[in-house]
Image 1 (cartoon, rainbow, N blue to C red):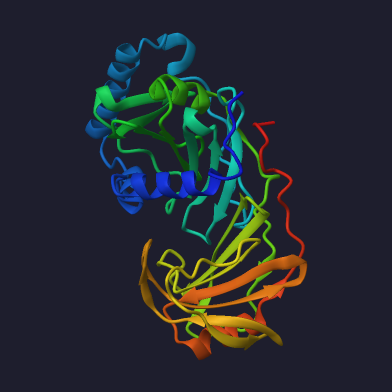
Image 2 (image 1 turned 180 degrees about the vertical axis):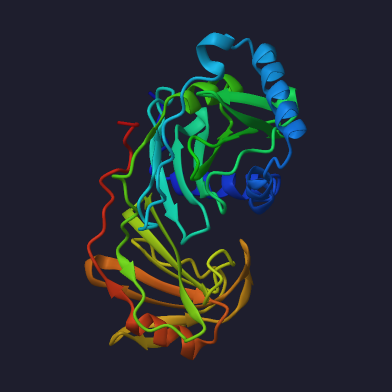
Length: 332
């Protein structure tokens, strides 16, 4: 079993995500394509013919898998921190490394890593118009998952994404980066995908005071060399899918200030520091305030707001019990 080391897990995932993001198709476009309604009988017949072609091309026995009964549509979870799906099977060595969620209609994400064997990302996106059929992809790019037609996309030479809808509520995207035989592995993972509804994203931070134009828009939990870490994001009110305006993070490592001299600042009654907006070794960095908290960890608040606004947000942050018990586990 190969497993990522404590020293490189977070860096590997971050670098891989950034590398993949530059090549991935726009998620909104994918969701829009999957939401298109077939409004006429000729189009429906054409879709069924295309599905049959895909079945033959993929070598799937028509009587065994093509039009098997589909379970009744599941309801979308009212609590967006609940994760509705998980793989029932993954190749040996893959262990869960990260969980992230955003409010409806944004997606939820889980990542399993196996070090040099690659990583697998599952993205669960609510359908904006539940119950509507797919737009069928061209036959060579189709997959069949329990009688439902999906599609496969080659994002680059190291990344492959399978997309399908297991019910009438969600669209699943399974992205494999650096995985050997990604289409074959992805097909089996898709075939053995199961409902979860038990797993949650439960971090250790909660926003207290936020500016009136901002609201909670995301939670991510993952593991670093010092233990569990949590990020919470806030974006513009009423725009849950917009990019984060402010991020608060809790982790063991002291923030890297690079070549910049931090400015001492009292935060939450403790000696912390402030860093202005700057260009660092990882690119442009937002305004930042940071302070050590109980347990020897660091609370860091950064974003596209000035020092006084970030300081006020940091003062109102609540530290609560979190759950990292899922980290490093294979699918159950």
